[in-house]
Length: 128
Image (cartoon, rainbow, N blue to C red; front, side, top):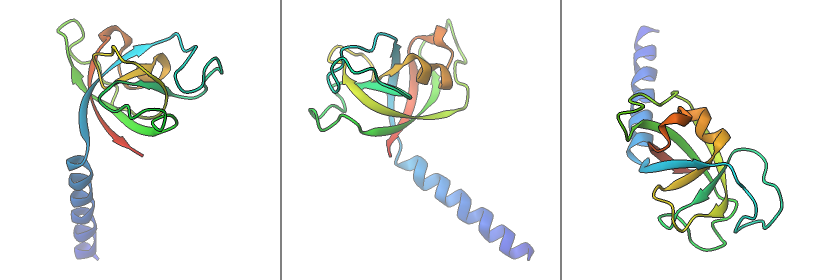
């Protein structure tokens, strides 16, 4: 039984390493004015949302895509440890052609993974 536990732990570690190896690195900012959006016009978005930067935008086919996003670190000395340790799933509802980050997260999504005072954070993301 002890050997089985060790094997299961090893399998879990390998699975974690494989999933981490496929994560993408990027930057995230946040916003709180959601209308109109490139995807849905003046319809009010619900849930945890994000605008896509040119890095991941592929036209209107990007609308509705979901990404798993987590904070990995700070980009400024003012908030050296912004991350909450949480991961969120966001839906792309807009295009942000001038964004400096990969995602411009809705304020609620950003607050779930990081301190809002950070403003810009390092992230890992995957399409889900």
